[in-house]
Length: 96
Image (tube, rainbow, N blue to C red):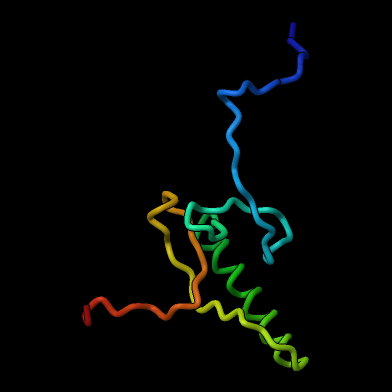
């Protein structure tokens, strides 16, 4: 016979995760310790980058000012293989 009691997390099992709304689908996504939205994989980050670029182009076409200028997605070492967006151009490692 099954036990039909509801699962009640204990204080030890509850983990507080900070979240921010995403332009990707309006759902709240986790935030990295760096303060940036954390995407689970490269595909999700690339999708968010595409949405950001389209929204920026639409804003400029309407004559609106926008300070957002995401250029690329990158893997973050701080959040264990999460992905973020940045407006910084890719650094050339050969010039270091």
